[in-house]
Image 1: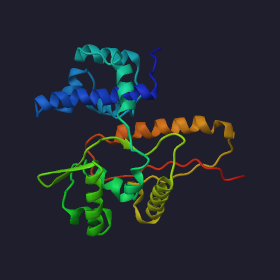
Image 2: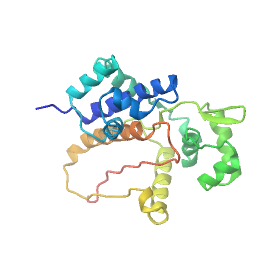
Image 3: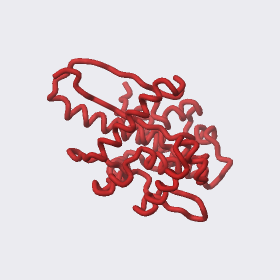
Image 4: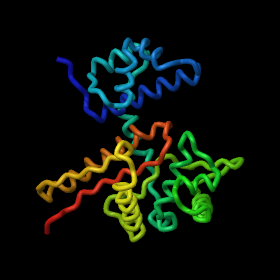
Amino acid sequence: MKKSVSKEIALEFGLWLRKQFHARKEKNSNYSLRAFAQKLDMDPSSLSQIMNAKRNISTDLIRRTEQSLDTEFLTELPLLLKEREKDYQHLPIGLFPHISHWYYIALLEMTLMKNFSSDLADIAERLNISEDVVRTAVQHLKKVGLLSEHQGILKKTKHNITNYKEGETSDAHKTFQKQILHRALEAVDKVEMDKKDITSMIFPMDVKKVPYAKKLIKKFRKEMNELLDDGNGTEVYALSVQLVPLTT
């Protein structure tokens, strides 16, 4: 019986495959997913599912893929996992109060979209805020080194940043979370069903399991970020997870 690998390894394998594919496509712009699938002796649909971590995979499949590409994934895996953790850069707690409005972070992420325009009026329209507010946000983000401008093009300077640190919070952090929750509340009525996912679960649990649950949620957030932030974004989304007691 073939042994399936964990979801974490399947996710890393999918990301690794994407890099292998894009490296070939950079050398040959006509290189297609179909051609890559043929090289790996897979059908394009299965390969796409694997690259997006939507399919269980076995160590046998990984070994066959390594042989086809004449490179090793499993040998690189410990380093990939270590580097993935390093990729997230923590914002100093003293800096966050200056950029804690939700649209500061949203603006940074917008610059990574395929269809991004650096025109302030366009940014204001897409974020549904005033152009003056956008101008102030751009100035602040440039001042703290999180946003650069070259030949009129705005760009986020650091790819993965986070304001989260275990056991650390502030009024600015709380305000930011309230703003994101408010945006989610608005989305309940204003955003079409096929463009959102708003679901809840209520269950009894042992409060001693809260630390373990938080670790799983942290892992889930990172996996979702790696899966969805693949360089092909057309909109900015917010993923907000709450685990809160309803009884006292």
